[in-house]
Image (cartoon, rainbow, N blue to C red; front, side, top):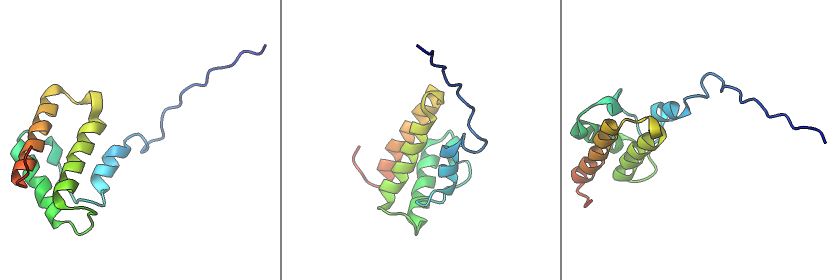
Length: 105
């Protein structure tokens, strides 16, 4: 029997590596402020997302859902690389976003 060779994993092409960053920058749903997810203040993150969602003419759903979707997308794509302190701030931003839109948690 012939032995099967294992295929070497090729490194992704430059640009294909960070597709989630491109989605965050060029989202059809929201025009985000620069560095919105780098803030350490959950209220500032939530306010920025709310402002972006309410101003957007291209979003496909209501402002709350668009803002929450972008925040969840960012958190999920960061995955294991997201430190616990950043995850905590982003989770607090979700709670603050619900509060600013008048939604019960």
